Amino acid sequence: MALLEVDNLRVEFPTRRGVLTAVDDVSLHIEAGEVLGVVGESGAGKSMTGNAIIGLLEPPGRIAGGEIRLAGQRIDNLPYEQMRRIRGAQIGAIFQDPLTSLNPLYSIGQQLIETIQTHTDLSATAARARALELLHEVGIPAAERRIDHYPHQFSGGMRQRVVIALALSANPKLIIADEPTTALDVSIQAQIIALLKRLCRDHGTAVMLVTHDMGVIAETADRVAVMYAGRIAEIGPVREVIKHAKHPYTDGLMGSIPVVGQQLARLTQIDGAMPRLNAIPAGCPFNPRCPRVVERCYRERPEPIVVDGGQVACWHYAEEVADA
Image 1: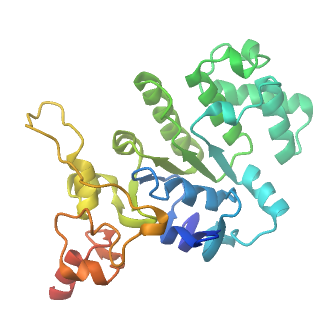
Image 2: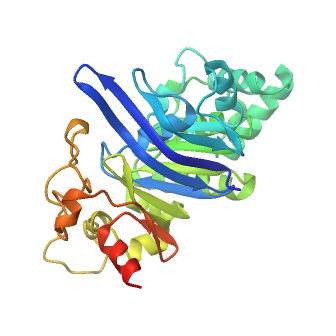
């Protein structure tokens, strides 16, 4: 049984002009110690899926269908207080801007100790020792001195390390990392990626890594889910998806990335833009931008089918499987 199981998740936003569907029938799973990358353009539904899993949907957003299970326990229908306890103890979160996760009025030590004591039975002395241990683990130099410093006294990369320490403070089973490297320069990105991989290996923590950066996915993830217009277009082992992309959208994403040493007149371009939530077309939502579109794509929505150890929602592969 997978550590995290998401089945047919649907997230809706009621408005005066009707109900908008931000996440539409998304199913995925993550094993213990595995990194699942979730990639796509802005507005694809990546962050919304992560927020639904950790119970942090902004009103009037709501889970309108499907189930979310953590270690076999259903968590999508829990009362707020019960979900809040699970969110700290069993699910950690790392967000794009560390300043939104850290209180500027308290030292990082105070914030770590409070979080640890909230979710464990440790005394203040033991919690401080645990906080120092976490700061060492995430690579904060001179942790004994810096534990009493405030967030503004740290660089962006060091603040993100503190946020990772906060996320790990109660030894969670799952971490939702939403664009954890986007605001950092490339060298710091590499350090944070290496840190996340080491934590998965050492702690057996499962990570859902939400990003728009395929380079980060290629370096970090075991499997990757490509999202488009609130749905999963393709999901599979990261090497297979990168080297042999099946969905036309994934193929376009891969073709838009420059390759070192390869001379190209121009990169692949995906024409058009992601549809707004109130203007998602019938059939396959990618049909207005797809170079391989056929008449059926305008009429019927393709469901994910198993191909080469992964899944792809595209009529071309449905027909190939049927022929086989």
